[in-house]
Image 1: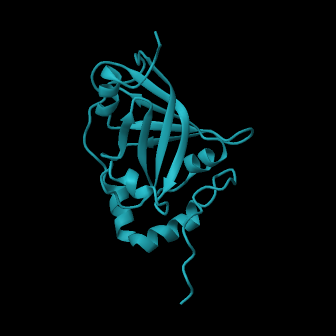
Image 2 (image 1 turned 90 degrees about the vertical axis):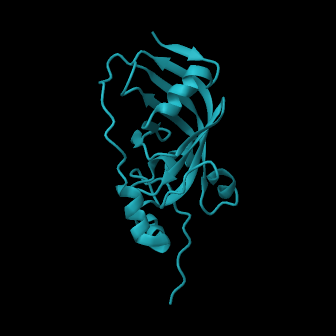
Length: 188
């Protein structure tokens, strides 16, 4: 049932671009926990070319993806048809992240909507593109966006978000370095 594709083009590209949600999977080398994160804020995912995708990484309760990318770069993105004909597309590859402090950030940020709390852009060099039937995935109806995370980050403000990251995003659940890029504020 599954098929391997040469690149992200044609109907696969159209399918991916229609999805309102996707999943990101990473794992550390050796022992450690596998992580799967749902993503779905509108305007935060882009196909850059037939073998490269990127998404805006928003500050949240953890930073497992960044920790795993720092360690080994392995990443898989999965898109499931929750509406319309069944389908599942997986993009396997190697990822890297560009933090909001990197000079390269502005160059990549132009592809995305401005979302409060953005901490990085994850860029994935896609090495394997596959799809499968998706017959076991439920048919669901889209009810709308949840705008809670962007609003929460906007209320915190720039320094409040950086403080949150320093407290909750500096290491992974397995103790790996994660998002530890926020500068420590100067004492008053």
